Every structure is written in structure tokens, then in C-alpha cells.
Length: 218
Image (cartoon, rainbow, N blue to C red; front, side, top):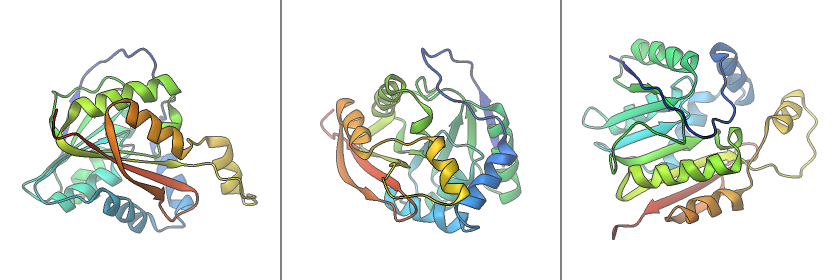
């Protein structure tokens, strides 16, 4: 069963909002060479999800990662997905219903997340930071810190923009699509009061990850 909650927000900066949900899924299939499931599972291993945890996927897109996360946290865990695009949310809801898993999807902006303080054990933000201007990334990081429980963790993944020569059509698209340097992700999380524990290459294309935690003392 899938639930969809709606809330209208007006943040100072929205960044880029994608509306072509079906095309987005096709692009991900192409970029991962048809291995999207393995791609998502590899991402989630970096988050160290445990059964019973509460997870938020910010910029959830069409819901594939949120659905995979729900399978990992099990029936005692909860998973929410947020995206600014109603088309993405609608497609995510259909996917979750077809998969037979309960995920709560919300329409909302990354810089003004519709949840109370300290609700989540884990926040995920994957391949969406490059859609936001720098100030909006800072706002999102502050929101993530607000939503994490003491000791909670955030996994941020995005294209790092390596300097290697790109030759394929997909690589050309990716170069134009955008990236965020690893050091910039680390800096914005640190500035929000989050402590970086791990960082480096994901192992696919030039994706980079940062795993950070909220202090147990606050």
C-alpha cells in the first residue's frame, strides 16, 4: 500500500524540477546499462540501513530507491519520499503499489521539508544536489540536520565531475547535466553541523558519496 501526502511549500529557491517521469526512468536505465537494481542496492549499502529504521529520501524521483530502502528496513521500519515534481510522485506511488510495499510519498521542496524535528534515523539524497543552487544546498543541509535524530546519518551521492575524457553520448549528456564537487558536499554538510564519517567514490561512473552523522550530544 502506498500513501501520498500533499503539502504546498514556498521556499526561497526551488532549483531545477524535473517533470518527465517516464523519460527519467529511461535515462536511469541507460546510464546504469540496465543494472538499476544493483545500482540502487550499492547506494543503500553505503547508508548501512538496519531493520526498523525510519528513512527519508529527498528528491526521491520515481521512487525506486525509496522502495528498495523499505525492503531493507522491513515491516517495522518506515520510508518517506519527497520530490518537488508531482509527476515523479505519481509514478513513485504506482511503482510502490505494484511492488506491494508501503512508502509515504510527499510533494515538497528540499529546502522546506514537511516533517517534524528529529523524525528520521537516515536521510538519503542521491543524484539531486546538482539540481540546486549553492544556497539551496545549504538550506537543505540545515533541514537534514533538523530532521535527523541524535546519531542519525545522511548519505549524499552525486556526480563529482571528474576531468577524464568523455566520448559517449551518455557521457556528453552527463557533462551538461551538472555535478557537485565532493569537497563542496562535505563543506555544506559540515557547515550545517553534520560530522562526515566516510566519503569517496561510489564505484560507478564519477559518482561520489558522503556519509555524515548528527551529533548525539544535541
